[in-house]
Length: 432
Image 1 (cartoon, rainbow, N blue to C red):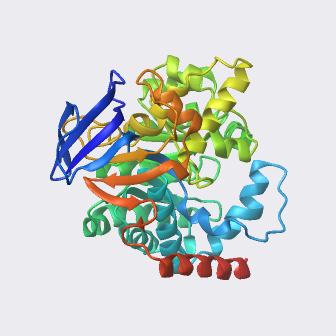
Image 2: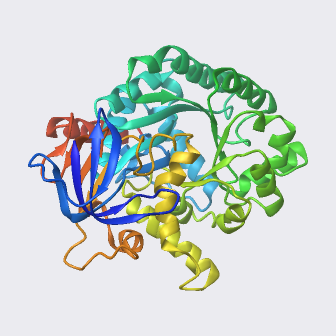
């Protein structure tokens, strides 16, 4: 495949932006990036468009899709109430069919929005064992790249948490080999919904399998208060004492992490999945990404299952961090694009393969029609973050194959599939 790009935003280490360039792809891998347009009639024609790397969503919950529009009576006034009154009821009501179809629908949305790689954490205790297989089937119907885990929780019992850990181990060892672009990892819901014994077991399993553990860390103050009450310390030092950071850690949210906790995260090479839109929606606060960056913590961007449009998630990040500083120049827009591409890829440990447009990496691209205004190399990343949306995505390319094209839809997904997704959602509403 050859792709001709009017503006090529590479997101390499130098953040190079090239005008009038072409990319050569062989066997799904980028083999050359050259100036000028290739005179190839079969080339992908993005000469009037901006090309960016495939977006990477480093923290999502695909099982949240069916709840959009649900006629729920709950009116939570805190993050903890939202968990108890909404999400834990949804968890318990989920079936394998819901798991498969919510994954299918979410992957179709992500691809149509320019996301080519994601990391998902699923919670449906009544679908175990086998729930992750159902999720993987939905994912694999599309050409997207995905990391999957079951969210282990002892909120009902330690035995239930161990079932979640066992599901992850089963999928890592026996399930993922059935899929080309799907892999498994481990996940603990939070510290406050687990026990020290569960944490230690999860670490042992993850280290044995050389897989990361993702955890919701200090998303709400309940995590902090419960940790102090149970362990006499805030969550990060408490987890450190348990040996949690012996594993590779992806820490989602970190809204209430203090500087001393951020230092512990940095010392242990923990990576942070920042979820700005979700943090706004749940009214939990604003993560101190400035201090994280000062300590060289790797930061990526996730939607937490709330919004399939990662461009809106980028803008949410820009908005809240400018507002926090009350300074319209207080946050560099291009940083958000970095988080949504190479940053998220690094969070997932996949930055050697995806997240930027460089020779030797997978040919994952998004082409954008940003309208009539000229696109200048110096301002292109800012233009993308400030103005682009999923509606501007003209193509999504994974491994050198066009898997979404505006007007043609997503490869592997048809109208009947999406109708089934909607039917399953309506049936879930009835059960809730």
